[in-house]
Length: 323
Image (tube, rainbow, N blue to C red; front, side, top):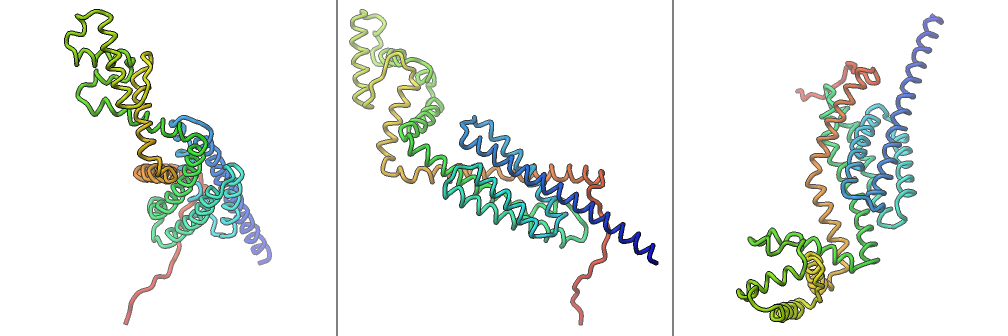
């Protein structure tokens, strides 16, 4: 009996050791992915990276959601969850700019991520037959919302800082974006070719207003062009350089109009753009959720084949109504 007990205790000890190693390994991977996500997100938001760089925060976030889901499934200890999530929050506060809004966004993300992990565990317990898709599906809304809220506070801080530092460039960016859509709002796109020079644009205007423009002398042409230039300046209040492209001239016109129309609402600009960007990201959140589900299913099958996980049958009690 003593030998049997010793063998059983040794087996239980090895089993606990294997579980601890797997849990620790998954915790390290999860925390590492979260820290990496903070770093690439910082680069995308504050490092002057192109828009295409945003693919990296999206990809790493998907891997992190998958990893933290597996971690929640194999680790029932809530203190461990709290500890490793707290490490992720500390890393977030170290990497990101020091701003109250950024701290608030990180705190909300921290709380919602804990709720997400709790939901994963509850879903797993309530299933008669384990399914990684069913386990993750209902909780993905929580973690997606957490990511969007956190990114929203980062966007707000970034836009507010950029606008306060250089409001003229902010208006100019708006004007440039608006002007790019002008050719698509008119049937005569050649007339509003934004790559043509201002001088070429004025000449086309003169040819339309004065059909005999090409037949008159050079001095008369200069007078007609000067008249059109003055009308342009009086109408829009912008001095256009003949060598500038129409894009540059129209951007200055639209920028000035935007500044006059929206100047009294300047303090709401950061909030407006934050809501706009987050709403746009929320529209495509289903793509992120599906990517997480597919990624999780693939890695679940791989880990199951490698015997990192195992499926075992258990006897459970259920409540039934009786009389």
